[in-house]
Each structure stands twice: as structure tokens, then as C-alpha cells.
Image (cartoon, rainbow, N blue to C red; front, side, top):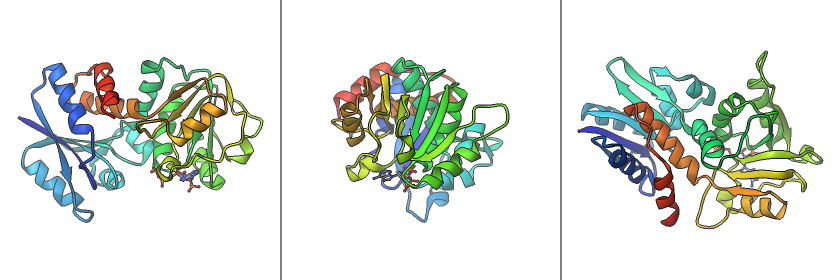
Length: 273
Ligand code: ATR
């Protein structure tokens, strides 16, 4: 049987085995998918053992996404843009590194939530790995504008400059205070503020009528960012559970060539939170 796994440290909490098992059952694909704990200093060795035992592909999570990038022989353009890899595929011609996180969030926003990005003013909060992986897919979606704002402004301007290419929309980078007086239709939180139970220190009045606030984090109730967004007038709120399921579906598609239906899987995960 074809073997797949998610590799990380820690890994016991991962929802990926459940998601991929549901995808396999739904699409009639015969495969196994497990959770693989790698020692912090044993990522490459764990992968080598998994491949030797017939492993076909891996999802990669914290803290190994950069190591996975280095380990891959070839990269998809979106993995190159993200500078990180969350999906590995093992084939006869070596290891392919992909990154499905950005495609996952875009699909969740535009398809599942039915919220267009094309032609809309878009704000991305944060300048770490989570933000970086979202920039190329966001630019490809054709927003009216893309602003990257970060607590440490210089990281946002550097990131925006990195993605400024001739002939395409040029992202703007700034600190939070410089957002005052601006209005956005789609606001995505890619900071890790929620992990410390905090919301980014944003000026009020950012949310345009009909706007979406999207937090890449998720939990049982609203995250601190979503609580703040509601108070500040966002019309729609969404957390990152949908992104989790969509990035998994994108990995499944890369490995198996079949796109699973994410609707029922997402509903099941939501009910179990
Ligand atoms: P990840 O890979 O998850 O993006 P990271 O690279 O550590 O993690 O980046 C964390 C991001 O969250 C950064 O943009 C960080 O802002 P700084 O660059 O100023 O450190 C942001 N962040 C973390 N805690 C925050 C908080 N309480 N308020 C606002 N931004 C925060």
C-alpha cells in the first residue's frame, strides 16, 4: 500500500492523518497516512528511513519546513516563492518540494467562503513564514492592491520589495500605525499573535463595508484577532480550519492526481473542535 505521513515535532496533535484518511476513503484511493515524529536533529534520517520503507510522500510541519526546502531536489514555483516546503513527493527522479499553504488559503477564501480577492483591497498582517507563503498566490489572484503590514515595519517593507516584479502589482509594506485611515476588503492575519492570546495592535477603521477578516489560526471559539475584527466592523469572519483542509487537499491532488471534496471533511473537523 502507498504510504504517506505528516512529519513534525510535536506531531501527536496533527489533524492531517484524519483529513487524508477521509480524503482516501472518499476518493477510493488505497493508501495509508500516519503521523511521524522526527527528533529535532533527525529530520533527514527520519525521512530516509520512511522512503526506504516505501514512503511516497510527506506533509511537513513545524519546525521542519525550511529543512524540507533544503532537502528537496526540485521545487515548484510556489515553494520557491514561499522559501519553505510543506509537501514532499518522492519519485524515481528525486524529491519534489511543494508548498500548498498559499493555494489552500486562497481556495478557502475564494471558493469555500465565496469571497473574491480579484479587484479588492487586500491587507496581509505579518512578515514571517506564514505571510511569505501567501504573497504569490494572493498576487496571482489579482487584488486591487496588496498591503503587507507588520509589527516590525522593516520586515514588511523588505518582504514587499522582494515580491515587487516588473509588470505585476507591487505590494506595499508598512508598520501597523501607517495603516490608519486606509480601508480594506480582505484582511488576513498571518501573525502568530493569537498564540500568545493577543491581537495585532491595529488602528481602528480598517474594515470596509462587506469586508472579510481571516485568521490563519483556528480554535474552538473566535481567535483574539477575530474578536477584534468583529468589534472593528468586519462583515465576515473566518478562521484557518478551512485553510488546513484545503492545503491538505492540494497535497493529496499533487500525490494522487485526484481532488477530494473538502466540504464534508471541514464540517466534521469543525464539529469535533
Ligand atoms: P510564522 O512562521 O508562523 O510566520 P514567525 O516567522 O516567527 O512565524 O513570524 C511571526 C509573525 O507574527 C511576525 O510577523 C511577528 O511580528 P514581528 O516581525 O514584529 O516579530 C508577528 N507577531 C508575533 N506576535 C505578535 C503580536 N503580539 N502582535 C503582532 N504581531 C505579532
